[in-house]
Length: 122
Length: 358
Image (tube, rainbow over all chains, first blue to last red; front, side, top):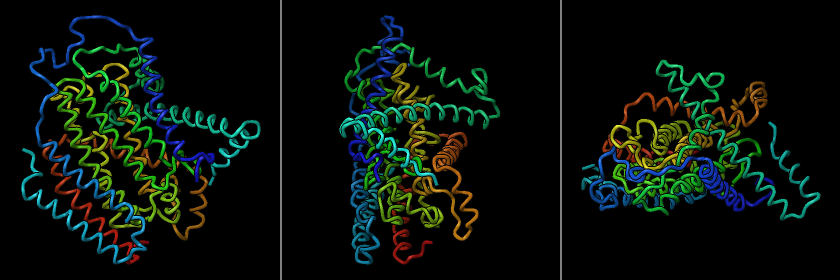
């Protein structure tokens, strides 16, 4: 079932261009009607009035990356599970056992990370 | 049930009768784009009003009352005000990424928005991998938020973006797992297929215990996914000013505001699609008269009513619970929701295998 017999890919591009168009049009309108003024302090970073000290684009706490790596593992797992989920009834018990082994390996990974304290926020 | 494809095919045939095929397609795409834009903007305005009023009533206030009847025009006034604010040119920022970030945020919500089933025959993008595409499209938003925080060259925005990134990627897993649970039950990923499969009962009732667990997990994870409610430490105003959009001014900030409220609608729409039957009316097997009456209510009204109801629940969450800390937030996801979600997936598979669902 497709709207107006247009292919979904075309419609996806339409939605994408609508999003781009919305941002671009609003920015153009804002640029035309908004006031412009100049002040030396205006362009500075807003850190509650205190002059910024040091670099802001810097090396950052590693804890966030740890969670990102864990996320990657489980997100790829979800991608692999989606095709199985659609036909899980036709695959039957054999499919369930294979996916069970796959899940067990991943849960072992989660258990390992848990045990190692990777899920604690320090 | 009124089928909107009658209207759309009438427009299509009318245009086809005096135009070549490619021009018809172009005009139709433009019409769809304009409709999408209008609905997007109006819905965002409605949601801002909805949240402000609900928040006020929950705190024994009246909310906006001065502009227009019941303050209805307040949101329009706010929109114009935000449009005429100055766009400040900042020093020391990564200009390209700073300008790119709002585009990504808006594109992510627009693509997901276009997938929602609005009514009978009223759906724009309908891939056969529909819900999977939705998950993929909505995760572009994280990229926009991370870029916004990084490119602003400000410590508050960096911390806000990092927190938001950690939170959104973590809770995306739970969202994915609860969607997966429903896909196992339905046996299809296409959105029209999912709605069609709920003709004789919504998945929340069909899949009983595992579907209900998935519904609760989805609501919690969706709330975190939209950076709202008790999970709003990316923009915790007393410690980070405004989080990742501190440096954005005027309409640039408006985009984030717009996308935040639209995301609230989108997650409610997905919840109603997956668990409450999309635009399908409430049918009770055996009650013919009741079903006939329910069929008289238009499908658009059903979809919007379900989405607004779930949004109401999410707004209620937001104004009821205190903000959680980042370690509590990560603990909740990785030590509770994720294992429960995995277990629930296996439970649902067993229910489907042995035909224990209705």
